[in-house]
Length: 165
Length: 165
DNA sequence: TATTGTTATACTCTATAACTATA
DNA sequence: TATAGTTATAGAGTATAACAATA
Image 1 (cartoon, each protein chain N blue to C red):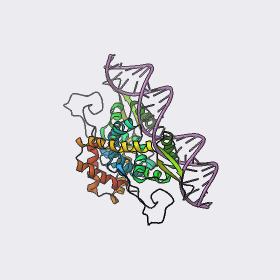
Image 2: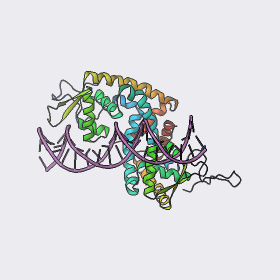
Image 3: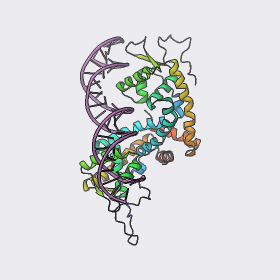
Image 4: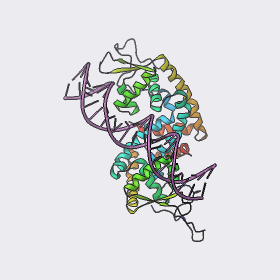
């Protein structure tokens, strides 16, 4: 893909061989790269997360998602949580350690298979998780000046197809 | 959001208070969280990137994007690259150091403003960048068993609206 | 033997403050 | 004074190997 000639013989001679500061950058091959656009969109959603959920609740993204999963499903094994969140087993251990230390969850040995554990929310954990669920709504609303409700739903549906694991 | 009762009085008494291993996890509040679905989709696109571009070219995502931007626009200042890729200035310095060390680009002082630099591709850098552009195509094609071409385009358009910076 | 979870460790990525050289 | 870029440093996120307990 050859680049557009940015200059013109008649234009005031620029001393530098580079596009004007005011000019939007061309994306070139990045234009049709889904991964690139996902990364760029994540910059926006990460900012929103930090403002609406991360800061107020003191939870990182993985911590928040983990609490939401237990809130929705009841007790779960670290193994299943790790698979659902695409985290390695050692990282899941550390994540659970932190949340347990904060008193948001506890671990019980499974009676069925004593290698396995049940991770469950404490009272405080359930309280925070509930609050987190509620606080998610205004965060999504904040997207509605960029996206209609229908577009928002459509976008999630398409991302689901990509994620499909 | 109360969780569905997973048990039934008549069912064989489970010893553990948790959903069956075979059962899909409920997402609860995560269901309408755009950020969550973006993160999940990124797991897939990151895998694809690693296989099609990262491994073969020995380039990380930020390195690849940077090369694509210079290929498409010609010489650019680190400042503009940092803004375009949402990287901090110190991280941009390190990124450029690595690529320069590999002989893929070089830095020149700007003649217009001697605080600023022009980052430009070397011959080898241009060669790798070209190869990267070409190798991107089969990567996107690999998505087409999950997404039609129209859905792929639509998805990128929606992500653009979210990213909008 | 295989699986669940842990420990230890290292590497990448990101964030911040302090500095330099130019404007 | 303000801006472009650098250096130094620390923190978060992620990956891998070796291990203990249980199946």
